[in-house]
Length: 184
Image 1 (tube, rainbow, N blue to C red):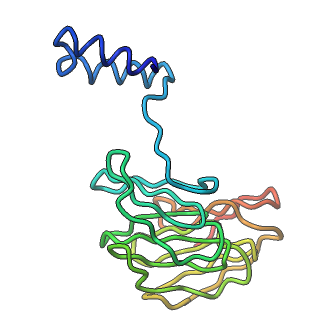
Image 2: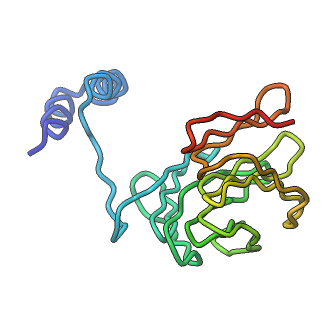
């Protein structure tokens, strides 16, 4: 029996579970105690996303959608590891992969595949204007509007790990070349 199970059983036996459970779980999380394990991927999990509705997405070569520890859906479409997951404003899911693509998903169906990078896509973000931006091992950043690449930014001498949009609307990229670049 796990520590969590023992605490749960003791609280429930005393009729205190509903009153104290939230505090106990917070304490347990604070103390670093794992109280849930979700299994479903056959290979290592590469990234996670929490949706606005509280569901969770996890990725390996497939994407799984979870609610309260139960796998609701498995999204199949990428042919290699998924590196990045985001929920875009309209509630769709965007995923970036080692297969050099970005996929847009709605209700478990792939609506669109964005292709244009020559190597692994490591990061995808949604910009304030609704466009997507992606960073790749091909040393480029691509800006996407309605599924079409409208701009390619070049300047790093090695693959990129991360991409963010700054408060002022500029982009910041982090690369294996040891450099952070700011783009307007």
